[in-house]
Length: 94
Image: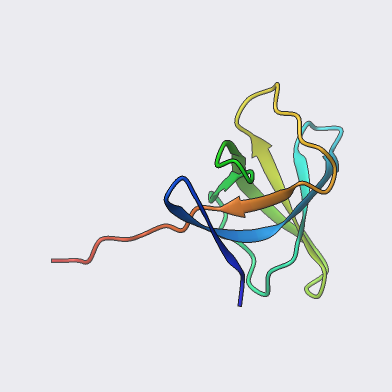
C-alpha cells in the first residue's frame, strides 16, 4: 500500500524519488510503489509544487522507472528527492 502524505490539505501518493535528468531533458524517477502511476499524472514535490507529468513507464516489471516531462525548463530537483502524485477524483456518471 503506498504511503499517503498531506500537503496543503491535499492527500498525495508517494511514487518514488528522482534520479537525474536524461539527455532529452526528462526527469528519471525510480518508482517505489507496487502500482505505477498513470500516464499523464501530475507529479509534485514534497512542497506541493508541480514538477511535471508522467509521460512513460520504462524498465523491468520488478524495478520500474517513470519518465516525467518537466512543467518548465528551470525545474531543478536534488537527487533522491521524494516525489508524489495527486490522486484523480472522477465524477460519478449520472
